[in-house]
Image (tube, rainbow, N blue to C red; front, side):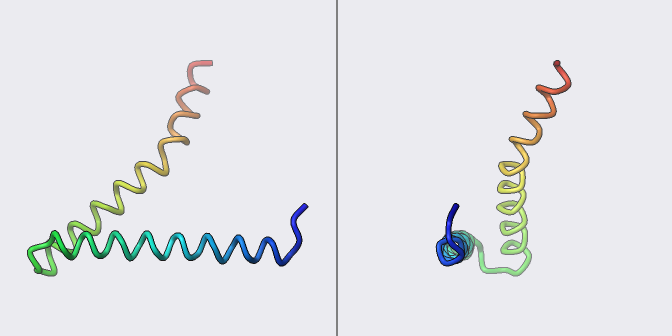
Length: 69
């Protein structure tokens, strides 16, 4: 079992990974956008949708396997 300090360190590292990923996505979106608020918001929402789909895929697969059983 990990110590409290080890768990806190890992939690901090995960937070940093997430922060870097969000910053990278923002940078890519802003570089590709035409600069309008509308397009920037659209691109942001579509990237979020893509990540959500990716995050939900294991759940969907599990349900499909369960339904086939």
